[in-house]
Image 1 (cartoon, one colour):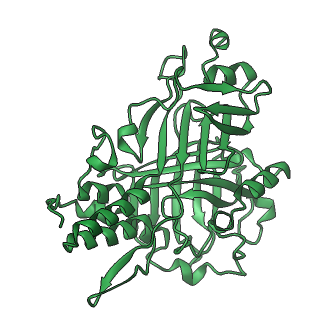
Image 2: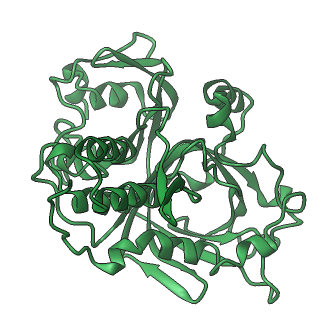
Length: 394
């Protein structure tokens, strides 16, 4: 039986995911206007198709080799505004780190109300409510296929005052809300319009409502030092999907959870049935409520292990070099889905890192990462990974 006290998490935190979903769907009207056959093709455009079929490595590589890349959205982006369904989300409630290269992306989103758990050491140190709180965040990463505006005339208006536009479709290699039993039924597809100076862009739903307005809108703004050379790397052995991206002085690292994921059940009229709705928060809540119903200790441990498996996905953001200094990379993590990773160093001179002679692969703690794309000069790339001879040239 669970003896933990209920920490009474703020309702605004518990409802964070549903509020984000409300905005994204315009309070549920998106499915009315966003139609297969008109706006997208299923399953090809759906975000989890390649992950479910195990074709991510092959298809991502083929897209890159075919020249399906575009630098228009390259940057490290914050999100000052997210609006839809008569609700808004700003940086007062959600902090976002969205790093994009010409092909790959890592997108991390954290509710401001998430409790500070940075002093903890491991998941087993957390109370049940602290575990529940951690389910309210987001991490996803993968490949962005971008079509410029001249290819999307049926969706986009013509360029106005030199502001570039296009349509982006994101395919997820890892996703906080992914579970094979509850795949996302619609694409991560959106229109964008870039400001003339390239420091901001607006994201709109592809579908429009009866008033010809976007169902939702997001405004993205470039972080300081969020422009410059980029680097994208992916783990090559296929065992655990992992990705590292650098843009300017910003980095993001994403590492998937263990698969396959367990089944989750909920009590309906006294009978436990398969949970009907996916999403990390909803699945964690199902296990949370099951434990709160005073199940046997053995069952409690089982449900708690399910929660930890869902939460054990790393999405970490930080700065490569400490602000104002460029002597040696610090790789300091500033925010992470695993809070005790914060203030730690993703990489260090003691991280057992080596670059191949041709600069095509990096071995990190015995695991090989393929350099998927890179615009850093050779000496700067070597300096990123603690080549002492090269750091003196920066």
